[in-house]
Image (cartoon, rainbow, N blue to C red; front, side):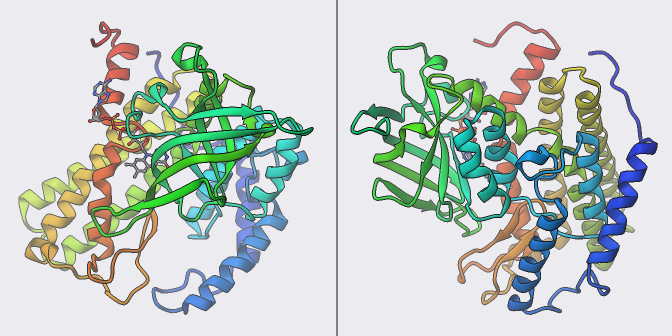
Length: 418
Ligand SMILES: Cc1cc2nc3c(=O)[nH]c(=O)nc-3n(C[C@H](O)[C@H](O)[C@H](O)COP(=O)(O)OP(=O)(O)OC[C@H]3O[C@@H](n4cnc5c(N)ncnc54)[C@H](O)[C@@H]3O)c2cc1C
């Protein structure tokens, strides 16, 4: 690979934008921000979130990279990064309904019909509808093109008919809350695997859609199996044309793994800072082995940061190495994160084996993951939940073995694995 540009600060134009965001935050955040843990009641938090979302919407900070004609501000990638950096610095929430704002919204803007744009984009911006992603199936994960869910167009009436969808999706995050699912289904069964797939926007709240939550290792159940039995969607629900679903899905996955991930090192830095504090509280910082592990993890987190910066500058410079860079970054952050949380649990010693969360609590807020509610009889603490959830880091968004395959074949040019 050619050497990537490493620029550790941004230039003058970007500094002006940074000042604008900083000034807006100073003018709009409450004076005592950020609140201390437990300082606000759940009702106060909900009220703040609602008012804050309205302010974000009025200022155009929600989906700010979208074109102005669709309610965004047309921010460049660099400006989007600065926006996220400044909100993170001020510990201010920047609404990101991951599936709507980051995945399906931009995909509809790229591939959707004018009708799809006018139906869905304003509702996504206002936060009126929530989404889930129906790609994986019981026998189609890494090998997604082997998916078997089918969709058949039935012509009945003047409006072009409707799709009838049958099959099963799995690991569908937030399926129990979603109003719509963007899913892949086989619509052209006689075409080769990648060519017979379409990308459909399907309402979740209908008799043909059944959601069965899957309980996870920490008692939470934020993903589900989704059973589709003669589920229906309007004929106009296909995004990007019939049989073109593979290409459209790759666009969505590009957004999933894209530049927004350039910010991910910030959460790992914050998390590690908390773990170093934990080591201090427990008097472990004098132990040479613990010191060594803390320093190792700090260096690894710095490397996540440099990997993310390379991804960003690849996008800014149009050097088109994103696939290779994403694979190395994904492999590195997921393994590093697991090692960091192994260290945290080791620091807790025997206490790490006792469930120390609040059984009556509302769940734990895990940075980068969100609120995880477990079962009342399994009260894991925030750190224990983060440790348990980190086991999935090397699976979701592409497994480590798949990343290794990409590195072997596309970067090292090794022969294809059989
Ligand atoms: C927390 C979480 C949330 C998720 N949310 C969603 C969601 O909202 N929507 C959605 O559609 N999916 C979601 N997924 C599913 C995710 O995309 C899949 O788990 C992932 O793509 C792997 O697929 P699989 O689980 O079927 O495993 P498989 O693909 O069956 O893999 C099993 C094992 O075989 C290995 N393997 C497979 N192929 C190869 C190969 N070619 N070479 C070497 N080794 C290989 C894998 O690395 C793995 O170890 C989520 C997953 C997680 C963990």
